[in-house]
Length: 234
Image (cartoon, rainbow, N blue to C red; front, side, top):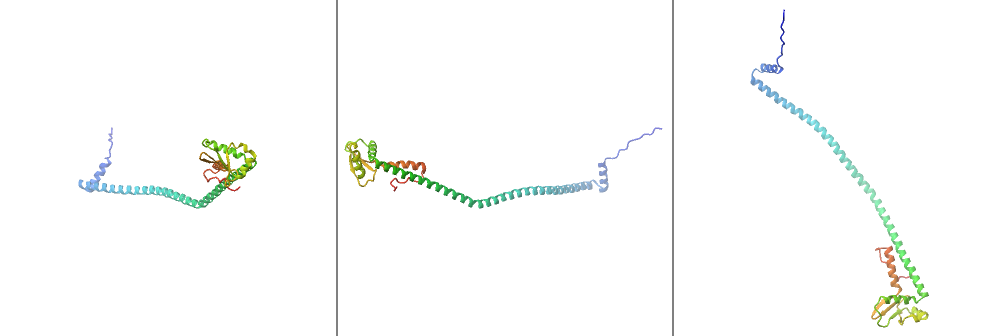
């Protein structure tokens, strides 16, 4: 005997749930109201869950960012405080270093000034000794001075220290080239003035020494201060 089997199909779950809901609510309107209420409650629950989750995540992110920002601000503030403390400690040290440098600079400048003065004194003594041994050197100074003056159309007058004049007349009177040698008590040894054709020039050794010492001072002192006067006492 053949027995035929037919496969049983369960009704869809959704249909069953709808049927159960219909049987429970009684009418389609009640079902629609229940669905709307369920949707509303689900949406509210989803919103609350999303809000709570977002709040937790936001708080975590905020705490992380806050810690990082606080750490950065604390580090910057700490570095600023350390820098301020260092500046307070370093200020007296820097002042002491600056004072030491100034003392050293003043000492070096004083040494250079003393060197210029020493060179001037030695040069002046050498010139004085040379003119004492050979007073006719003054005549060479006169010749050099005349070369920078207009050509002589009248007598050349040379004003000398009285002692220099006597020494020149005694040693080399024939070498005065017809110049009119005149004693001037106001002139120191080694000094002389030349007058020709209404012009006058200093032919003495002092102004030449001053020019030379000016160059020496420019090399050693620069623009620090003027060179010592060549008329200072030896």
